[in-house]
Amino acid sequence: MKSLDEIKKIREEKRKELDLRVNLEANTVEKHILVCRGTGCTSSKSEDIIKNFRKLIEEKQIQNVRVIQTGCFGLCAKGPIVIIRPEDVFYSMVKPEDCEEIINTHIIERKTCRKITLQRCRPEAW
Image (cartoon, rainbow, N blue to C red; front, side, top):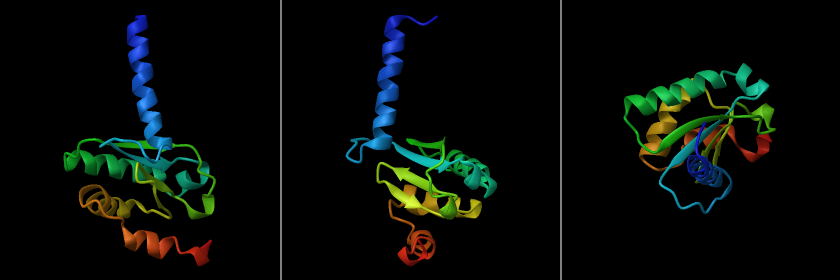
């Protein structure tokens, strides 16, 4: 059993983590790569996407980046969906082979992967 102080510390850590996911002005160097694991995205290989992101982060020894599987974002026709926080960048129709480009361009170079967003997220496609 944990002490009250340990529980309070865990609570504060989780609040900071959740703040990053909902607060676009979150002041943090940490990034969260949110990957949908709803039924539609899972059937479109979101599990492989999660594995690829985690493998690349480990191989490249990238710090302050977490890959988090989420529930459904509600846009199943555009899945698999990846959202990167705190920038709140939305990538749709992500394929497992896109992970390296997202890591290299978005995480390392700090640029949006226009190739993925423009080709797969055109407004006329919605």
